[in-house]
Length: 214
Image (cartoon, rainbow, N blue to C red; front, side, top):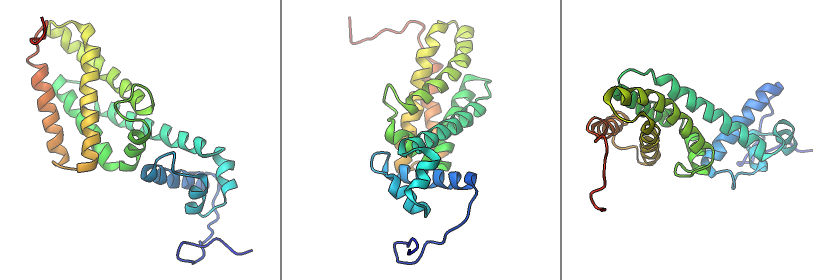
């Protein structure tokens, strides 16, 4: 029986791997394909072909496309969550904003494939789904720190939840936009985000009212 061949006709070299090594290889291949094409278009056959294995090998390790996708997404979510939470060292709320904005943009720059997977199949504006759930977790971290600031400044601490959602959503949506355009430079984008957010936080009314409605 003839061996597998590459697109140019040359045989794909078969590399013997341990079960753990093969699993990691399949995850790397699937991650790249999900980022490039999305979950719906990517097939088990394509994952197997690019990894140089047969389809049963993929099924053996993950049970199918849904299984390998779930592992890829779970890993990416945990990595991003750890990255951002570790960056939130607290301190002054302005520093908190800067830490969060820089951490997300650093992640987008260094793990572009991972971010594409999270936002492609779970848009940032969605009320449910992986990325939305992750943003809620991050907002909870921000809320606890922002609440202390509100208490010190005489604002209603219960509103910290609302403002944390608004701030995290602003940074996340800007990050999704920057993923495609990559301009201005990363640090400049973070500086503008912090400028907009902090100028608003530092000049808030205690009881804001709409001017266009009576």
